[in-house]
Amino acid sequence: MTERTDTKVKILDAAEKLFGMNGFDGTSLRDITSAADVNLAAINYHFQTKDSLIDAIVARRIEPVNKKRFELLDAAGPNPTVEQILTAFMAPVMQVKVDALVPLIGRILSNPELFVERVFHKHLVPVSRRFVEALSKALPELPPSEILWRLHFSVGVMTHTMLWGRIFPRITNGVCDISDREALVDRTVQFVAAGFRAPASKGSD
Image: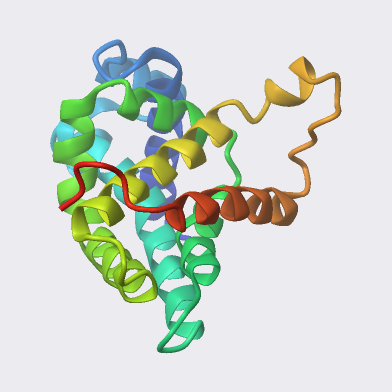
């Protein structure tokens, strides 16, 4: 790793942690330079603006996840089951190290406009299209609107499970343990798959 690359990574790591703790508006560039032990010129050199830095942090986390999603979906073959599709969609997210990611997700989801502009349009539109297409093929009896609603609900289940990952074992007195990520993914997939297989809702077109 070169000195420039090392400096860039230090900035990204520090900013991601601070944004997760204090929010995007509550974190200044000077906060980041102090935490990363770099000067302001280094941030200007690598990212130019705070907005560009936020985009780089989001891309660093989401792009590898999306790559893995497509790899798993491709590996499932031309006619994957609902469970295979959902595993490809959820596992890459639920199996990553979440210490820094979970607070960041929480901050992004608490600001819908930020989510739409910074995350959805830039990183998730191709993913959404690909998985909606696969689910529509696996569940031809469901209209497109119902597939979209149910994929939306599945994202809610997945993110809630991650955001409560540290707390849930405590409030269940250890009965529910999330340390086995493979089992957690399987449990989540089975739950969501049952929802996808439910009859179409009233008002579906």
